[in-house]
Length: 245
Image (cartoon, rainbow, N blue to C red; front, side, top):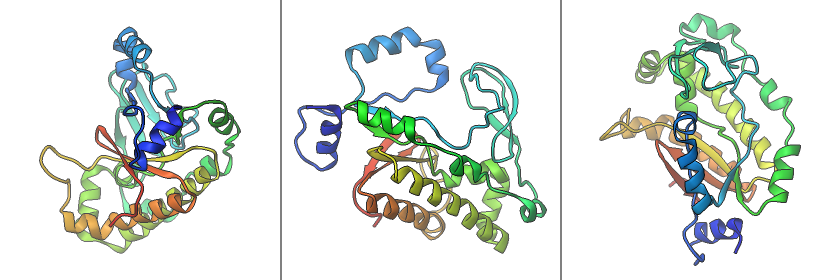
């Protein structure tokens, strides 16, 4: 049984020969525990492959994750990486003030200039279940663009500026997902970090009213293309085959 068949049987609640495996590590772990990770994967190879070609990383930024310093992402926010192996944190959000919204331009070139040729060749040449690179992450992206404190106030105020901005970011991610759905990947990878230690970062009712419809739209597009949804929340994969109910 190939890895792709194994994952598909699992998602369809059939009986694979064993539970599928995957290991998702951050650059810091790769830097500090390279030999241990290689030894683990040698004994327990992953059944899931990751595509490259994700939007959101500036070609002129700090491409080496082991370097420290400031860099500007393709969305216009300035990050600071204080230690090697981590993404860092946003120091200067691109839209810290709503006055910048009128002139703000989404990085559409990341989608319009993209080719899936290499991704498709990898999908066709391997037996892994291949996921798209990280695409939609609306809650995190809004934090990166507005700053976390501003965003929580935006959600509470529910202003027309916030609603307009939310539609802009959502529209970008829908188009990005439609592009990935035309590729040969088996599943579309989404992510957002919603969890504190004991609860959501906003009330469940607000989550359902503001953000659940976004994820539902993503799932509808992906399932219409006969692909699976992999949603990474904090440290765990959740694979959705049905609609958000």
